[in-house]
Amino acid sequence: MKFIFPFLAGLLLLTSAFSAEPAGDLDPKAAVRLIALLNDISEKPIAIASIISGTKSDEGFEASQVRRVTSIHPVAEEGSRVRRVRCYDFFWNETYGWFVYEKREGRGGDEVWIWSENLGDIVIK
Image 1 (cartoon, one colour):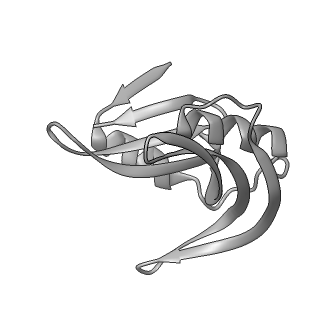
Image 2 (cartoon, rainbow, N blue to C red):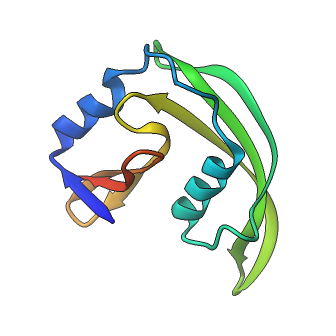
C-alpha cells in the first residue's frame, strides 16, 4: 500500500518526533519485514546477523533512536541473485514506529521513500 503526501508535510512527519522513546526495541521479525518491503523480496530468505543500538548524526542533526541492522539476503547482481551482507540504519518516531528511508530521483525531481512499521511503504513527492 502506498501513501503519497505533499513533500513538506511528509518531511515534517519524518523529523518531528525523533526525541520520543520507542515502546520496545526493534524486533528482528519487524526488521525482516521492513527489509523485505525495502528490497521487494520475500521475508523467508532474509537472515538478521545483528541489531545494534546507537545514535546517528548528519550535518548537525542527531537522531537518538537508531538501530544498525546487519542482514544477509538475496540481491540482483549481473542478471542473477546472490546472497550479500547489507547494513540498514532504522530510525524511530511516534508516527512511523521503526522505519528506514532513502532519497530517490523521480520523474519530477527528488522523492523520499519510507518503509515503516506503522504505515508500511510511503512515497513523499
